[in-house]
Image (cartoon, rainbow, N blue to C red; front, side, top):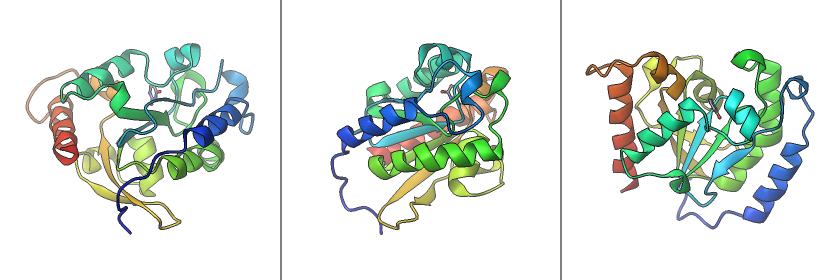
Length: 203
Ligand code: URA
């Protein structure tokens, strides 16, 4: 079931989905946020990056990963000559949780069924990078933590069985911002190792 050559992504369908998404009021997060943050980047990209949910800057600007964490993500990608046009970026939940708390189970279930799962079916990326515990545990259906899972490739199978992606969990940039050490074996140095591994698989 490994995909044999990826076909063009239907950007019309993806735009229609985004428009519906922006009008979503399906869970309790929407009243507390400014706007729905759908996605950003190149839909035809081979790499999909999935974060947790919008933060304050994303909520204000309306695009994922535009705050300090996003700037660090850009630096990580740039280390292996990847830009925003080489990736597509979205989040598990599309509305900012209050005070950046983790999304709750009902919010994640509602939001992913309506938006992330249809996005995945349209995008069918080759590689998926999950940033931090929330997207990793959601997409892999595991309770294992990011420290244990990061840096390895795992198969991601869509339940329709029609395609399979390789998924690599990586540390969330917000975690790296709280752990600035550059020591070998520290989260930053491991992340730079991980992104080089992504480059290797792409090449
Ligand atoms: N953190 C996330 O997980 N997603 C964003 O879009 C921004 C910060």
